[in-house]
Image (tube, rainbow, N blue to C red):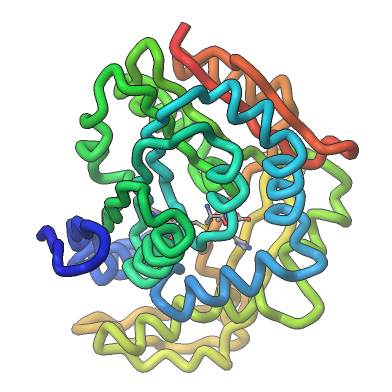
Length: 322
Ligand code: SAH
Ligand code: AVI
């Protein structure tokens, strides 16, 4: 569905229409109940994520923005002139607003997000700030289709994938996803990707267990989303946020833990939870610099340039086809 009665073009591929319900039922039927993290981002989830990015404990967004700002001229030079920017999982305007001011005559900006509310806010704010930029918002699930990448052949196509959202994929899926992005690049195309690096476990723990409980609210909101969008009777007060760093897997795992034995009804299904049982809601992988370079190589991509902060907590990589 294409809408043009807006100051920008909006292509709405309606990514969520049936997949949310299907994924919830399929996820609850698993031996270890689990949900895809992409379903966190309804309107409330997107605004809770924005609140997370401003928390003192959540160094991720702040550190990446610092890198984008401090190395802005170098990053812009590496990207080159008249870039066609496609931003996957764009979220709010804040990140791209650290990149666009440094670029020389960017040609177009295409934010891609599963969350229509986040997408529209970002498209509007970009246009307000850059009225001459050609802006097309694409509401899509990038794990289902990458057809929108087929434009701009030979036109300095630059895919931005910021915020370490790559860490939310399983390791094998991350490699497969990067490889499919590589397949859409031309010789002059590139990927600018933000990657959260391995660090002290206590720092990681606090980033996902903040004092104000915003991350807990973000996690629990997925249950409220079920109550709003499905025939469901979940008492979210009977679940608690549980996030921990798994050294073995190099990732933060987020779970929702049942406080008691309970039955939950969803559509025509009833699911049993034992006390302490969890729903695995998100993985957030952390990489060493060499692990990420190896992942890029495995995905048939070279690291053309790399920028980090003083503490080496976060990395911004520019990937190209060999
Ligand atoms: N890049 C932003 C936002 C990161 S949050 C930043 O760094 O702050 C992850 C974003 O990706 C959210 O806006 C979410 O709606 C979007 N997202 C998650 N999974 C997605 C998917 N499969 N397809 C499209 N967008 C997705
Ligand atoms: C979007 N993604 C990279 C965030 C992360 O850190 O994994 C989502 C998030 N989950 C809890 N806090 C933030």
